[in-house]
Image 1 (cartoon, rainbow, N blue to C red):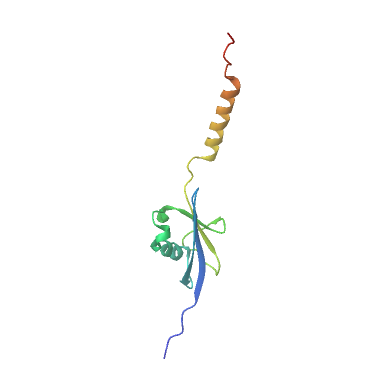
Image 2: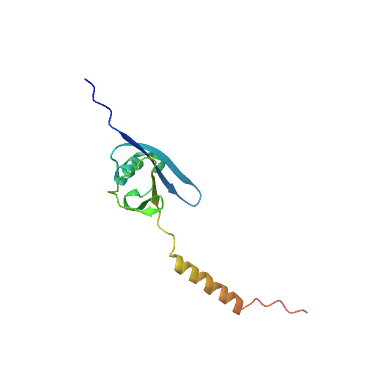
Length: 111
């Protein structure tokens, strides 16, 4: 007698870079966790070169741990590290704007 097929859950794993985005659907045995989805993504060629093991992850924009159980249709998001601290980047832009305003370029003297 054949064993009944185990239920599956379909989830999407996504990762975005400045110039490209990766999105792939995975069918995982239920109950599936974020860790299971990340293992499947790590084995997929589309996600090669991405440091999945050390990345923060979330489901629909909310940070979650690897033990979180996934529901049908969940979107697992792999977050990349920020290139710069947002506060420090804004502070540097503001300082640059202040320097430009306080030292406007002198126009050449007319001869």
